[in-house]
Image (cartoon, rainbow, N blue to C red; front, top):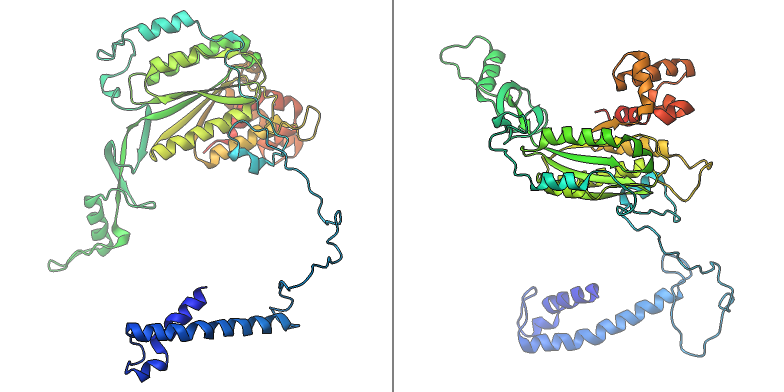
Length: 434
């Protein structure tokens, strides 16, 4: 169609008949001449198209050989047109049973069509917090103006909890450096000094020329707001560790409440994870969300990390400069993998390996994570090696790595059955280390 339109306009501008009426080539004709050109062009292009189709359908070689045409007359079936001779049998496409967002998980981990996720039932199980106590905290008037109950300096309430040193334009400048990527804030005195140092001793009449190599950027230090995601294990195995969970949450509250830090809650049990409270600086909302938590079900630890990563990506879309921190509170005894179309004993039933895969995705996204193990049975390693928890597990993994002949502590943990059961927090912290 585009070829015909182009040919038509070329014809009305360059038709030889235009010369008979005194119209030069390349000049748009008058209305009577335009009508005459159109009357001549229509049958001419019709004849040309018919001739082209006749040539193309009779060719036995070349790119247009064997072109399909519809011929007049009665239809005669050819071999293969009969019923039941189709080369590919028809099969109805099965409807997916996924009931939650799995776009980040399905492709990397090869989940098949039988994948199924059961969202946590927050109404089932034993309460994690005393509802009356949470209600009293909600109703209590905060005395942030005096800062007494929060035990923070007054100046820290308008800031965040994370101390940073970067080239972002906040805080106070402390030094200068060569630009690393895009220049955000040029330090003019340091730039001039670098230019003079490059030129050496100057003549009084000589000018100082600043080049790209002389540019220095300012490095600021200050406190930036955090987006803390509390990823809380509320499976049945956590029933004996609820006291430790409450103490950790109270400590996080003391550090973040009253500042610009935002806190969100993700709970996981059964075979899925759910965002109970989106990140907010209003702790009254967080109290209400904590009151919904109930202990029951299994431990889908890898799914919890994927849900936290999904929340981080959403927060970064809202604010590119957000500083996320995932606080994973669990007993690190995962028993539900990401691919749940298989059962225990199957080669693909690997909740620990799925945990490592999810942790690697978090590291790739450059997200800080704190793995807090509240299982009292996992406290033997620090007592035995007389070291902090993660340092003790690192030492144990390195010693076993030399014995097993591996080159990576993570692979060593995955290869040793007793380590797989107790080193879950170490795997997450080691894999996510930036």
